[in-house]
Length: 110
Image 1 (cartoon, rainbow, N blue to C red):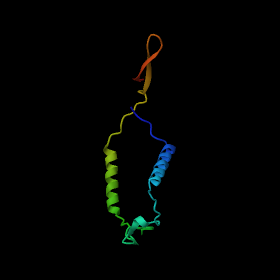
Image 2: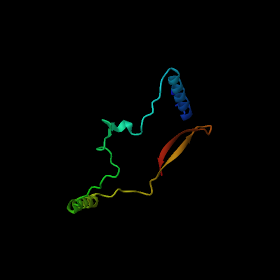
Image 3: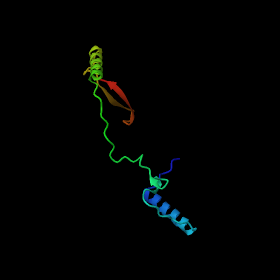
Image 4: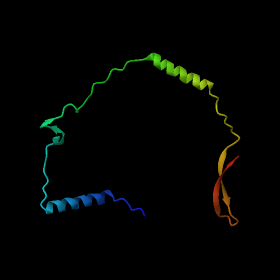
C-alpha cells in the first residue's frame, strides 16, 4: 500500500543517470555567472537586495500597554480558580482475561 521513500543515495544515483543520458543524447550544460538569474536588463535588481536593512524606530505607547495590562489583571482577578483535588488521580489499569493475558487498558479514578 505505502511505498518506501527513496534514500538520498538512490536519488543521487538517479540524478547522475539522468545527467549522463542527457549528455549522451547531445545535451549541453551551460555555465552561467553567479547571480545571472537575478539580472534585470543585464543589471542587478538593487531594489530587492537588502544586506543590512535599517532598523525601524518604534514609537513607545505606554498608555496602550497600561490599558492592556489593566484589562489583563482585572480579568484574572474575577475568574474563579479551577478546583484541583489531590484525592482524585486518574491512572491506567490493565484488564486481564481468565488466562492472565492483557485484554485492554482503562482509565480509573483513585
